[in-house]
Amino acid sequence: MITPASSFQPLIPVIAIDGPSASGKGTVAQRVAEALGFHYLDSGALYRVVAFATYQRNIDWHDANAVAECAKILQINFKNERVLLNGSDISNEIRSEAMGKGASQVAVHAPLRAALVALQHRFRQPPGLLADGRDMGTVIFPDAMLKVFLTASTEVRAQRRYQQLLGKNESASYENILADLQERDARDKGRSSAPLVMADDAILLETDNLSISDAVNVVLTHFQHKINNKSHK
Image (cartoon, rainbow, N blue to C red; front, side):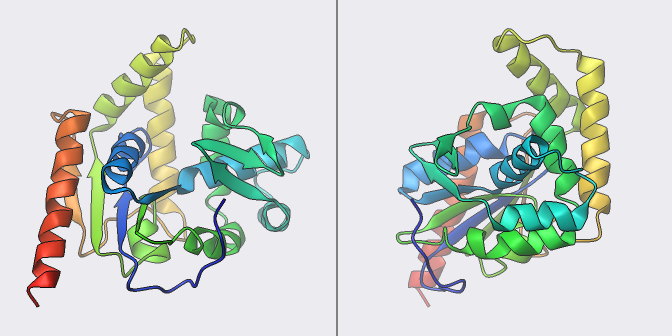
C-alpha cells in the first residue's frame, strides 16, 4: 500500500516512460523497476479502474464531471502486482479490451486527470519510482531524472496486441485492433488536457526491431549515465 508523500520530492529519483497504447512500455517499465528495486506506477491502470468503476455505476464515460466525482471517492491500491478497488481485487476485470477502450475515453476529461494527480504523486517513495503512462514526464513528474518516450509503429503494436490476445485464447481481429489503436492514438494525442506528446528532454526509444530485453537495457544504460553525470557534478 502506498503511504502519503509530498508531491515534490527531488531527492527521490523518477524514471518516466510515456508512449502510445500497446507500445510495450508497461512490460519494459516493470522490468526496469524490478532491476532497480523501484516502486512502479502503472498510470493507465488508474484510468482503467475509473472506467470499470463508472461502468459498474452506470455513469456515462462522456460525462466528465460525473466521472471525476466518482474517481474522488474510490480507494485504489496496488499490492503484489494486483489492483484493488475498495479492497476488492479487480486485476483481471480492468485488463479487458472493453476497459482499455473505456480508459482512453475517460482519460480525455480534465477534471478526472486533475483528480488523479495527487494519487499518482503519492507513489514517489524511496528508493525511487518508475512511472509509465501518457503524461508522466510532461505533467505528473516534469522533474523526472530520466524521461523516455517508448513507441513503435501502429502496425507493429497491433500485431503485438493480436498475438497477445491469441495467446490468451481470446478471439481477435488484427484489422479491428489496428483500427482501435489508430482511434486511441488520435484521442490521446488530440485531447485538450495532457495530450500524448514527447517531452522536450525525453529520449526517443523506438521498439519496432527491439526485444523487451533490448529496450530494458537501453533504459537502464541511460539511467546509469544520468547517475554517473550527477555524481560527477
